Image 1 (cartoon, one colour):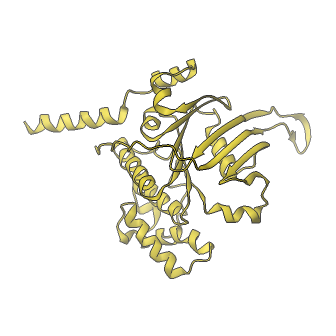
Image 2 (tube, helix red, strand yellow):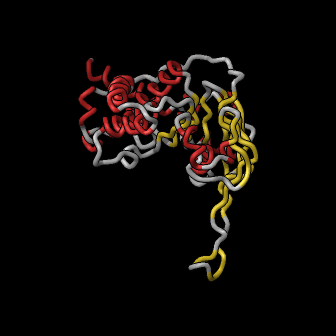
Image 3 (cartoon, helix red, strand yellow):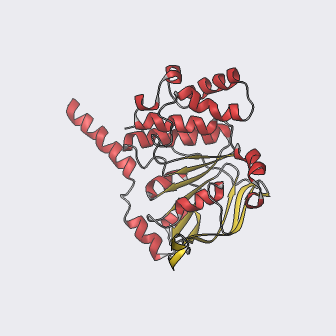
Length: 293
């Protein structure tokens, strides 16, 4: 199993890329049938969330299922609109922008989803999938295709992948395609929503190393969402712990991991297999040594 590469220690940049203030999102509260009947129960998915993410950093967002992690991500990227609060991207409050005004900011923010197969059009070839974003921004087809071939190499795929369909690839390879698609519009900020949780441990390590290498080479800023604190510990500079829509603990990931202040955070850490990826890697290497003797 590939070894997780140690991350370089980075000084915090002064440049703030993403900032939220009192962000709130709820669902429900409407009538249950054609506007009649009882009102449905209102669920507050994100409650007064304040975060700050600086250039080149990774913010890890952790919590149990239903804690509001993915809803927060979708509000930040404006896949859904928040009810209240502010989301600033490079100093611009994008919650106030109209759809046509938002379009020019889309290229700066991209998302890599949990299920790579579901997020790729099964009827389109990989080259067309990755090239679509640049072409929608007005880049000529030939240049978009050239960029796509370069990105396939960057994410560790053969150039022959250009003319193949998503179903011809493994899960890890499909996630690399999704990463290439996100990179195609040259974003500054990428949200990874449980982007390795569906992959085997060996493939997880490869994808995590790739994401870190891309961050170093391209100066990317990440929000990394996961329920696995061992992965977040490896990836994140800062950590936000979510529970029932609230951020209950926020700060440097290493400090939170070593000395959690909240009982909820401690329970998440205790429920996480200790250094799961590294332990499994060592176990496999040990078995290989035993077989060779």
